[in-house]
Length: 408
View 1 (cartoon, rainbow, N blue to C red):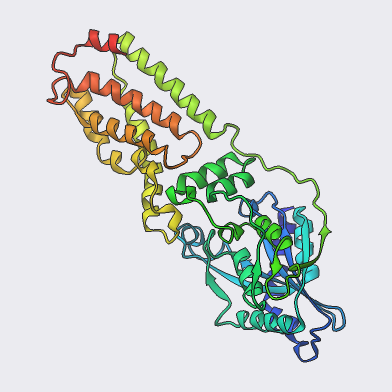
View 2: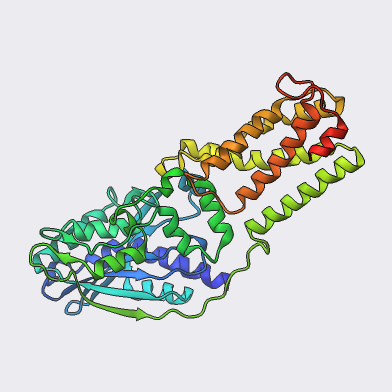
């Protein structure tokens, strides 16, 4: 199966390299009256990068035999540092044009469906769009900086079509949702993919969106095109809609057996059990605190790096109050002071940040399981305040082991 997939991808890449010559060699005999331009909407398949579907444009002229798919979502994982560049919003995508039969074969292989919407365009508009795509496909124009919400394969296809329609179009108003709510509808069956998205997305992903902004998702744009009206003659934008490839049952790839919420509950139960054990046995499991600090720091490094991303929706992320790189600089101090029995008031700082994290939940939706992680950290910090701040000017000087046990 893997070899077949590799062969298919290599073949498609070779076809794309020849696309400029193959797809436009018939430009001189192109007839706008017989040219048909359609929007293609592909359903998701099991690859993580495809969970939200895909959009392309079909150019078809039955008289000349032209039949190609215009795809603004061409990328390669093999490019140097592709994933970091994608995360930081500086990845380059490109336009690719291949014979339609190869395009539909690829999605048939993955088991996706393809819905085709033939657009109601004038002969003049068809030629303008055709020429605009040809210009886009030139070597100096074919690359663009991809941005998942604001400039992706779907919005590029929309703009090349709608921006060249006389008078533009009007969409039927629909209820709005935030970016986070929209992608949650698509990754519901992939909890760890959702967790990763929600960990990176900040406050901006929970803000209201306009109808045009929601068209970053292929399904949303397909629905909007189906109900759109041309402004010049008040006719429907879509002439005909048909499913040209039916989806088939797909093999669901195995993920980690526990969801983020289940992992959070396991962590919280272990934290409560170990804390009770410490109180009863009068022990101090300082290495467990170090473990929690490492977990929070590793997640926090990812969120901290997002401050430098080009994606506007990840820059302000209140989850950094809970998970951030700072604990890495305090782990050695914590272990040393707990071992020597000296006072340590850092627990007060962490407790304040955790409380602010909980309050931030009224503004931002957090990743699944983050409240459970916060509860575990809060328990350990409250225990730390009672045990290790008793000689701190901000803590209780009279706290003893017995009244700490009563307090917990």
